[in-house]
Length: 560
Image 1 (cartoon, one colour):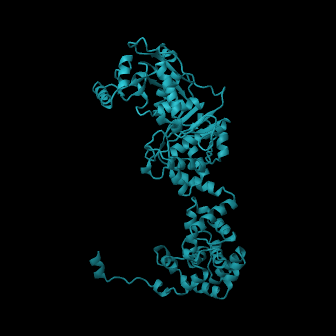
Image 2 (tube, one colour):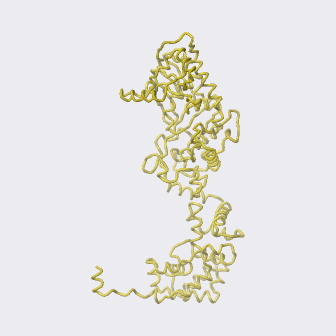
Image 3 (spheres, helix red, strand yellow):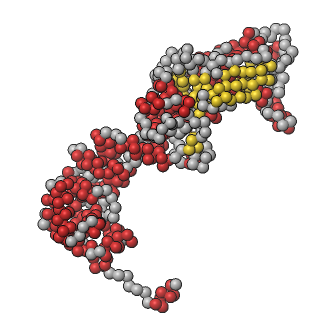
């Protein structure tokens, strides 16, 4: 609910011919209320109203999400309205991008552009005749007046108010001008704006569903413009007319719009419209607690989409920025969010955007996909980047099963598979971490491994699958009197060329299969098992095992 309390309208000479009709007369009363639409007596109708002047920011996406969840949880309607009255900055390309991002997130609207509805059109640029109609209605009632002040005169008023340490309110003469003065300016063709008469006393009180009771004094506002001299309506006027005529029951928006509520309440009252119920959501903050912006990295939905985030993970994470169901649970599907979401559990304090947590959550959602879905996602990705050229499905399936636990973002699958298919043996053997393994008689293990490969023993084991590999490793370890780390680390280095990685048996089996099935692009850096053993046979173990020559004492002293 909202109310305008203790309002007293200023007095001014009133020309006999200037009729201030019914609704403006109500402004002269001592007290009156602006009632909010009752949610219990009407359908819940909410709206998301982006300006197509750039990409969809994650803050805007969260606002859209909260509106969507509230509407779905109440069996209401989610309306999309494009606020494109900023003709210089609004672009069709930006509008298309915003609509595409909302669709990708799964926030499908019930009414709006390209969908239609009973209260369209749903682009502000197509509603100008409606704004003019209501502006004329306010002019006729006396709630607004024509203001012929030039820009220079308005700047002088601002400067005068600044010198007097007063708010920059309008102090011009046109609020009390005679009809003759007005007609004279009209005859000269002087440009004019429509300026709303603001009561000089009183205050507005609203009960915000998130922030609780919020109050504003009217004496800091001053008469404000609702229509520019070029005939274009001002934001607050458009929004009020749109929300009223579209029968919006709840306005859920960012807290930066909170100050606009005062102007909009006055317009609602002057036009005789009931006010919606308001809920102002706090800002999304960067880790340094400042407002999240481009300088903090990716901030638009499109950027996160390109980075490989899943829409369901974005939805889940954005919902948790200021909301929770009161439990420790953080993993939610969209259906679960619809079931549990309430505005009462939305926090009024700012929420910090944590990219590390978002990535972690994306990994949870990625691994929650069915096996077939996940295989398809990875296979499509690997083909698109040229790692796979063809596949009967089994290679991609086995690769997915092997690599999925270490992948949080879809593009990370590229590196995971490419890394497994590569064979950086020489760099590993020459690394500081690899030195201890080399010195643990790695050459002897290599000789035995080469012998097992040349005899066909290793390949026979790989052809038998996982059980064959396990049986062979056990036998191979016994022949060398090695087990545990002393066996598996040398084998990993010699077969994969790396010190770390996914399950070694699965890796070698997949590498062997990649050389047989033709699924892997040979130009992708893939080194087959045959090529690995050719490289292994050419290793100069004597050079690797040779200790660096000690520097003469005199040289060491000089270096020191």
